[in-house]
Image 1 (tube, one colour):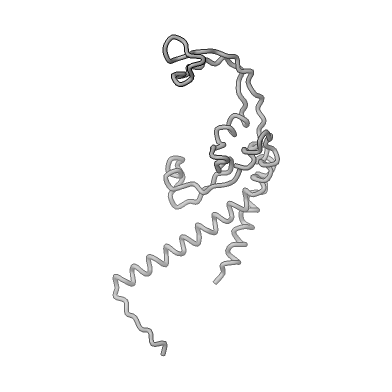
Image 2 (spheres, one colour):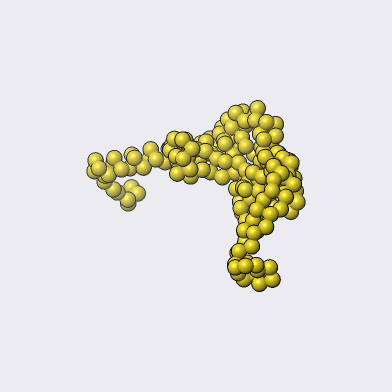
Length: 175
C-alpha cells in the first residue's frame, strides 16, 4: 500500500479531465512550434548572411518570435493555431531594427524633405521664435533585399523540414 489515498467527485473529475485535455493541446502546440522553428532556421541563417552590414545591428536582430494571441487575431489567424514571424525581432543597443529592415529591404525613393525642428534649447541656430524649418535633398537608397531572397532560396523544403522537426519532437517526448 502506498499510504496515499484520494477521492474525486464528478465535478473534480471533470476538472482533471479538462486539465489533461489542455495538457495534450499544449504538447501539440509545442510540437507544432518546434516544427515551425526547424522549418525557418535556414531562412534565418540565409537572411543573416544576405543582409548588408554597416554596424551589424540589423544582422544581430534577425530571429524568430512566436506571435501572441492578439497579434494572431489582428492577422486573422485562429486562436488555436501557432504562428511565428521571422525577421528583425530583437532590440539591439536599445533600438528596434524592424523599421531599418523595411528601408533596407525595399529601398528609399530620392526626395526633398522638409524638417521643422524645435530649437528652443539650441540657441545657436534659433531664428524668429522657437521653430526652424529647412529642406534638403535625400539621394535615396537602393533596395538591398535580404529576407525575400532567403525565403525564395529555402522556401521549397519548408514542409519537409517542418515534419522532420515535428517528428523529432514527438520521438523525444514519447511517453
